[in-house]
Image (cartoon, rainbow, N blue to C red; front, side):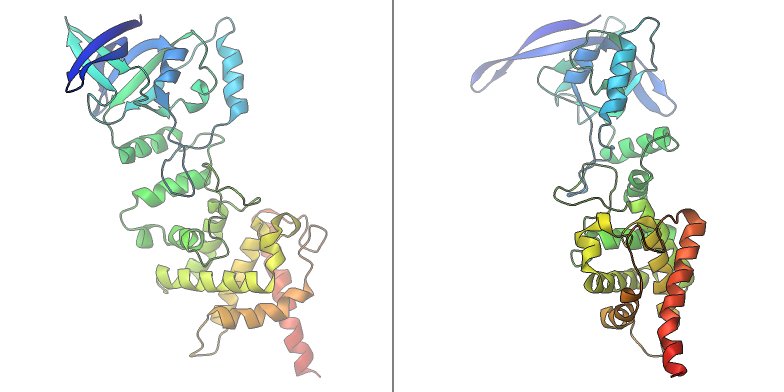
Length: 352
């Protein structure tokens, strides 16, 4: 049952009327956390809740962007005979009184939600609830009470860590927020995030995290793709520290962007910024560092000179020699093709 209440609040400006929606609940525990269990209409839960979708520009939030097709499929389902769902999971953000209050009355628990406020964060129900704002169907729900955003993120990751369709890049972003020492725990992730977050990097804000994208940029590689590429560097350049590998990766990709600017300005037409290109070029970056003469600083100038000789020899379009390659085997093959081209000019000079 759902009840509407009208409350009075007395302040310095007189009487302020507060409209509330009240949901009868049962208080209990979900493992080590206090929760409320109850039932409410989809309309009521939608109007009092929000999805904290990751804003890639600011780094705030943690949810994936809404999949409207998924949500509309659920809308059709709930209106059919025999439909059912597990409880929708929320968290009451903030403190009691910040748009909500919990009241114990006569052995029961009442959850009061101020009309116009949205204190319920959608921890696990965004796609089920996304397109149900006008429906009166009754749904079960469970809400945590007063979790921090970090605690919400941890629970979201536990619930959805193996969920089909959930962006691995979004989970990687969560890991970066939750790691106490990312440089030692996930060095490849530190390097990938450095490429995304450093304004002078050609990958600045160009790695898709799975949240609301930064506007104005074309199709991009994902954070997971770049993380896998950076794992190549961190493994092959050991024992270099993660921050030094990050500097090398940054300078290498700056050189790539300088020599092949169209790859970044028109990414749809080039394999350079696709997975196959990112993986293969990362292998070459490690080669270039390992073959550098002693005392050479592997910086933008060093990489630019090498890539400048290599780039004209290869067609990076989908119709070129790398077109159609995919997966781990394809990346290895692509790296071998690039290595052969890198060595060819040197052999010609030696035998001339």
